[in-house]
Length: 84
Image (cartoon, rainbow, N blue to C red; front, side):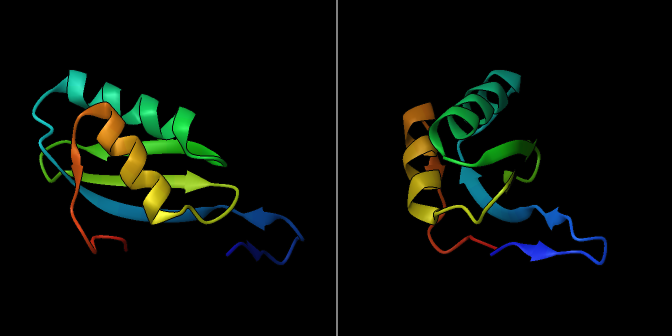
């Protein structure tokens, strides 16, 4: 769901997920690339390697299933029910 600010602009939708298996900057790059290219509407991906948290920002809400597929394609695992 998107929201509109008082100036009439659209606010981006943001969701945070927990990803298992990332250990290095290559892991971060792989997950970032898959999410940016594989999930429609994604405009930014922020990965916190130490915690395994991945925040996805887009012009619309992202599907947890689409995120799961992209993370799987990168070779990692989305923690079930981790959407925040």
